[in-house]
Length: 408
Image (cartoon, rainbow, N blue to C red):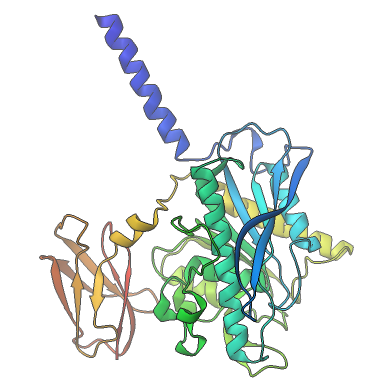
């Protein structure tokens, strides 16, 4: 009897340890740090979705997948990269993206270089904004494609809890928006988001989450720094201080178009730090736009640095417990808030799918400073503005998604 009990205990312990291992990535033996694989296999022109282009015509969306040759690991992290080109040019064969995909695949990652919808007319600020939304929808469709594969055919042996979005220049705008532009209300009304298909778009693979576990920002920017909120995923950025195309700090973009203000890596680093989002900014001193692009010795050296910085930032994240990525579970854990914006009082409603539990609440201002603490005593909480100045605030609780509110 004792022997049987011991056997059952060992079986149980083994299943617990296996479950724990599956919630993390095995980084032993130099995986995801050194180029331990001599060769990489590249599967080209994989269709990951389809969507209407700027003229309304259906466009197939394709990507290339890079995998370490001979790898036998069952579940591996994924890096989805997008090329640059100002949303008017470039493709998944751009040399810098191909090289990044190859380098990280040699370390053990699965990587993907995606094509996405390009071009816009008329050439103005409104339509370049729409082009950026369409491109971000495509990146989200690509993430959903791999998450669907991980749940069904497992062709690429992806661990769905460790998917990261990255890109260069315009591709970095996409990666940043994939990671941090997560509310319809954050998109300016003139973009006409609903007509474009919302933040997720209609590119394919519905029912699967497009949530990523981190963002790799190479010379990119966001339209608003406060899209980065407490509780968001980690961010690593690399950017030249003399970038005349996408500003290192705050500045204007869109040469030949009506000017549009964006916020580059230095501002995003400050914002992420203020709200407690893990991040790193590596500065290319006195370097211009995408200095790692090209075949010159200087460009190769910049790409070596880019590879090392991104590698060193991501690898510790692989040893952490994976993030819950189910769409429904994320949405159900979000408290409702109304009205937003408000003049005096905001009503917070505990999620109907969650058992109510009494807990502390913190209100943070736009710089991440706690400006009020109170207790959530009942499923409905009335949050009085009191002496708070007009502006955007974050409501933070234990175990629920952070909620943004606005006082006029």
